[in-house]
Length: 82
Image 1 (cartoon, rainbow, N blue to C red):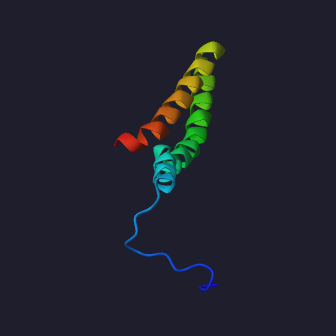
Image 2: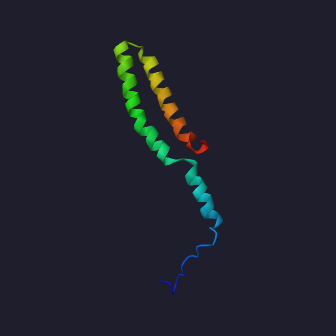
Image 3: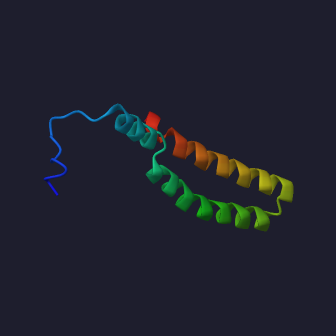
């Protein structure tokens, strides 16, 4: 195989396309999305149970659950700025 392709040089810089692709992948940190997704469902269930037992209006309950979703999404997106 080395007769066709020579081994990569360790000191050779990466091409521009690979550097851009790496930067694109780092823009959205998948770990923070996974963490937000894992924490969102228990928070959603807790909010639904607590507001249902207290007797809060359904529209307010859906609004709070929507705010929880937006908060989890913002938490996941702000990972690269920390």
